[in-house]
Length: 209
Image (cartoon, rainbow, N blue to C red; front, top):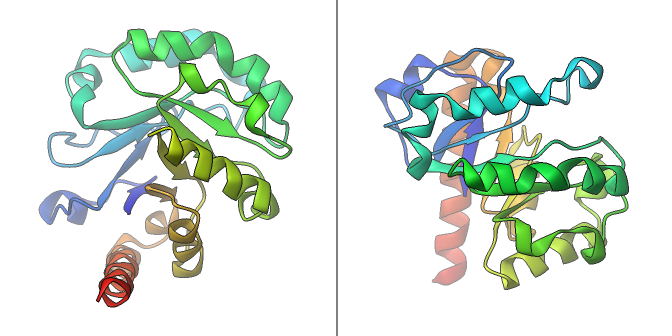
């Protein structure tokens, strides 16, 4: 499991771990050292969908410094519509080939009501579990995660800010998760995230043993 922080902490640079990285988006203006960690890129549409500009987002993705580290990028998230699976498919479909053309793995977001017929499987490299909390932890969502893994795709879940939710991610076959937990007190909360990940690893070791 890899945890992608929506906030950049100095400690993450000073003590990098292979299971902790960054979730970047064009709105936060952060420019961490991507040579040290795995990372992914959101599209920034969630906060202000009416003001979102596809051109600005694509220009941000095409930035030379970011593209230099395409090999460490887990995925780039195509734009989505919160809570609406069909609208998300309509909005994101034109951008998936462009993300790949820029050299990044493309991620499609599952929103409430999504099913296998609403996922453009051949156009994506990762499945991003979005939507409401009830949707993320539902049986239909789990089935999509299982299908993505069967197809050899990366699976990611958004808005994960507790050990309980991180544990649910593992049950759902999720490879990575992101959250803003570190932003609310990096010195205190980053060590807690490390503890969560270590606890998951310990549980895995016990299960294997």
